[in-house]
Length: 272
Ligand code: DGL
Image (cartoon, rainbow, N blue to C red; front, side, top):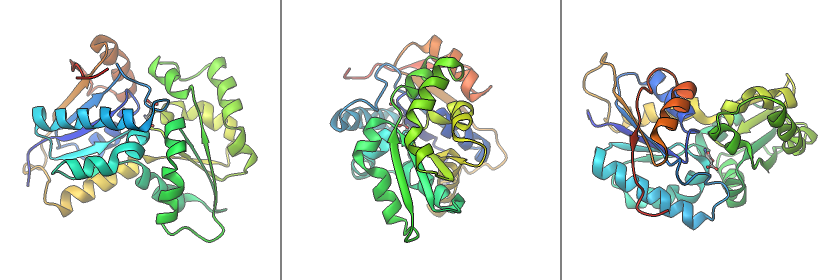
C-alpha cells in the first residue's frame, strides 16, 4: 500500500485524455499532472531535446511531489525517453505506446491498422517496433503516418471547424487509402479531434485511443507492485501544473478534462 500520488506528464493538454481515464478508473488515487505548455510541441523537436525535457519533468515530479509511479502520457516522450526514464528513476514508469498497440490489435478484424502520430513519434519507429514485439498476425498491414498541425489546433482549443476538416482530409489520406479498419490515435492530443477524424475515416473504421488501455495497465501495475492507496473509497486529490500560462491552462484544461481541473500551478523548467 502506498499513499503517494501518481505522476503524469505530457507536452501540454493531450495527456489529459489519459488523466481523465485514470481519474475515472482509480478515483481514490491522488494524481499530479504536468503539462509542459511552455515547450510544446514535442513532436517537431529532436529526440534528444524531448529526452532532456522528459528527464527534467520526471526529476521535478519525484523531488517535489514524491510520486510513486510515472505515467508518460505523451507518445512522443514515451518514444524518445521511456527506457531512459525507467533506468534513471527508482519508481515504475509506464508509457502509452504499448497499451495502444495492444488495444488496436484486439480491435482489428481485417488486420489492417493505421497509426497517426507526431513527426517525432513516426520517425522514432516506436510503433512498428511495439507492434512487432506484440506478436501480430502474419498478415498484419500497418500504415503509420504523421499529422503535423493537429496538436497545435488542440493546444489552441480548436477541435472542430473548416480548418481542422481540411487538414484532417489531407493528412489522413494515407490511412484512408490503406483501407484500415482500425485507426490508433498515437498521440494523446488526438482523441480531442476524434469527431473530425471520424468524419474523414468513415463509420466503419474504429478509432482507438491509448488512454483507457493505459489506465488499465496502471491499475494492474499498482496492484501487482502493492502500490494502491491504503484507503479505498476515498476521493483522490488532483493537482495540475503548467510550465506556461497557468490561467490559460486552467481555462482550456477544465474544458478538456472536466470539473476536477479547478486550478493550475506554475513550474519554471530549468531549460527552455
Ligand atoms: N501528446 C503528445 C503525443 O502524444 C504530443 C505532442 C506534441 O507534439 O507536443 O505525442
